[in-house]
Length: 381
Image (cartoon, rainbow, N blue to C red; front, side, top):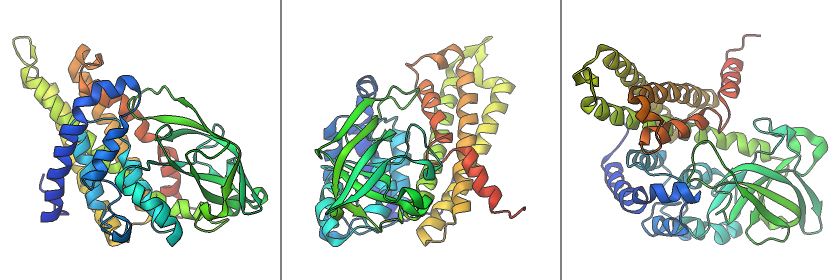
């Protein structure tokens, strides 16, 4: 499919990203899946090649280039090479609105250089055992104290939770003010009272460290407040649109990958004396997958272009996130069926893609939440 959103410099970056993933990530897929996290060295190697935090200003080690097309290329090549586990997407796609737009010069000096080199792995801690998409229901509190805040509570399902050195924690600084009492605090590795629980055992995404985090009277200095006190909810809402487009990018790339893998399989798998691909049912199933993939690719690229121009609406981001992740699930499930018993075997990549796909309809706001956002925009009453 001919794409219209990339320029020459993007294609050059694509070659760099593919080479990195082929050499530094794909060969370790099996090992990282077994150990439940990637090796720390891959973060440092990515930093050396300029594949992390390039949006940071040049004064802090980045290039100052804010163009989400580069982020999309990273994800597309990561998936196309069969790589797993490396949590660069949260680091590159989710964190910039917070680390660049909301930080002071002093905070930038402390955090951005390490963000760019991979020495400081980042995470964003919103979800709690009793609060997911409904941020107003979080119970983690940050009580104002002399010189800062005293943080208490817990978070769960936190991407990069084990490896993270910097964690933006969503907490209530004014529990009586509803969503206007939520603030963002940067918790750093080694702070007294900050601990990590289990590396959680998930259905899929086995190589991605996902953890519980605990905060027991953690003193967070006022110098670690991200943005404005009491404005955390609004800061999060602004950043979520980009995160949801990133989900659509991932889902579309997975659809393309699973279509490629399945097409190769059905050409060589013999059934009743002929290739599985020669059967009309196979052709019809993959025709549906192909059509859905191209529609999702077209819409996702258009959403990327909107994001780059700065005019992506929350509703359009929600449409991209909901529609494309739902089509991804349908496509991967249909393709696994064509593999038959082989598709149920973990030695086949399609089995991993099927497991990993399920979370896409949940993270960054579930499909149900996306439908609520889209439906509300219709002003039906």
